[in-house]
Length: 196
Image 1 (cartoon, rainbow, N blue to C red):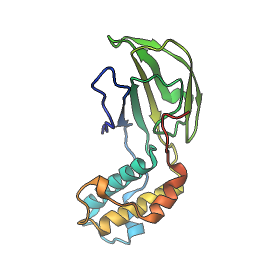
Image 2 (spheres, helix red, strand yellow):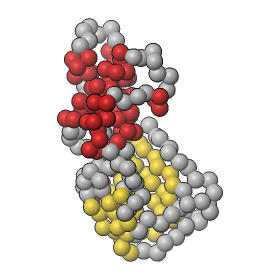
Image 3 (cartoon, rainbow, N blue to C red):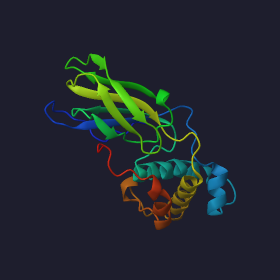
Image 4 (spheres, rainbow, N blue to C red):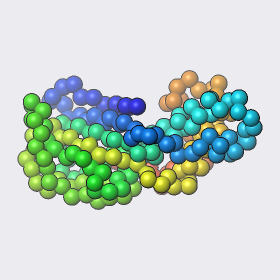
């Protein structure tokens, strides 16, 4: 899956793009059995539906938090040059999860940058060496290696909400998060990506 939040088309605009690709094999944060147990669903006639709702619930929770629940490759390109900023879509578990931090010239030739990382739930990067060029690019793997129990519970609650009210929603953006889901996810929520 690839989600493109913004794709700049004008070289003079200081925009950015962020693309995501799930790291294979994709393992959802909760199992079918866990979702059915929480929602008190017996039988297997709706297993296909519930399996799809698990993914939708996980995507909804990721969108609300600005965090990757499952491991995914994140590619950021920016026309602005962030010398210090909070990395979008954490958590960043290990320094080895960062595979590229470069500048690109107008021909897309890459020049490596020197940087320092602060790992964790709200990771930051400091660019400490290298010349600013046409564009900045960073590629890294984000996501939990072990999903916290409160996030798993939030996903279960979202699956139950989607299952019980499946006729009410026509698109993912219109799905309201139950207050319990928001309360569980609030400690993980990212509010400012490009701020220092």
